[in-house]
Image 1 (cartoon, rainbow, N blue to C red):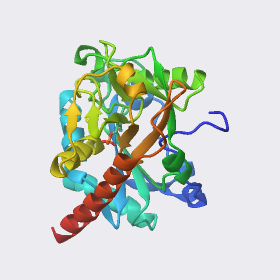
Image 2 (tube, helix red, strand yellow; image 1 turned 45 degrees about the horizontal axis):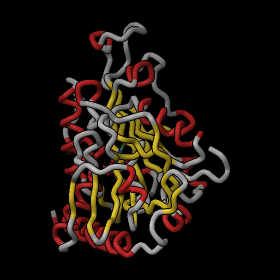
Image 3 (spheres, rainbow, N blue to C red; image 1 turned 30 degrees about the vertical axis):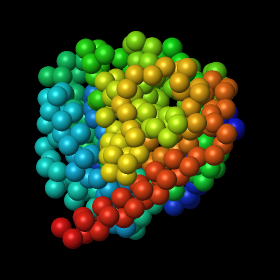
Length: 310
Ligand SMILES: Cc1ncc(COP(=O)(O)O)c(C=O)c1O
């Protein structure tokens, strides 16, 4: 990244992250000692699934939604995590507690098919799995990115048909998205705006994408992008608050001419988009993004209350 580059995952610097404890297969290990085998299926092949979740006041927000997606993905690739949802919650809680975290923390939970007997592809060689790692970092999204917004470039790399690698898999292999991000960076932008195989605006390499036009909120059909938990929460919030929302095909033409644009993801919630392909989006006023951010904040507060009552 160049010094001016930004990413939706930029966090404020926090020196405590140099000394965090990481969950590795049942043990809490200092970051410097946290290791997996070079034979690990995740390292060798990207054969694993992950989830990003955030901790608010001791509560993993939308934990059930994240587990629904994770367990659906694991089942689809016949990867037995050897853990229940309750086990996962317990290991995340233990990791957060060991690091003294209750809020402003972000986890990357990773489950791979585990260590292989030989350095080859066949899943039957993954005999010692799974590998389960949870990295939980102190994390406050960068105020600069949230304020100024992100610069996107449309790129040739697409998130494609479910018949190649279903874009709904939050797989360890992110090469498709990494290629897209490199293309955007080389075009002088922060992140990539990826189209679908038909040329309609789809998603970014790391977040879901929305535009606002004449008071309406539009996002892609959902056929070619990650089934983002935050994406769905924003759609639900629009529906509950009489904000017209549409999951539909639209092209760069409509994205360039939008009044506002924003990204959604667990990390940054709703991140404004400043530019697409060098074209400034709207006038800089972001009334709908601001309203959605406020509604989302209330939703998180309600989620924390409801999980605490359970
Ligand atoms: C490609 C992609 N799109 C969107 C998202 C956002 O999903 P969520 O809102 O569940 O964090 C992610 C996060 O994992 C992602 O990798």
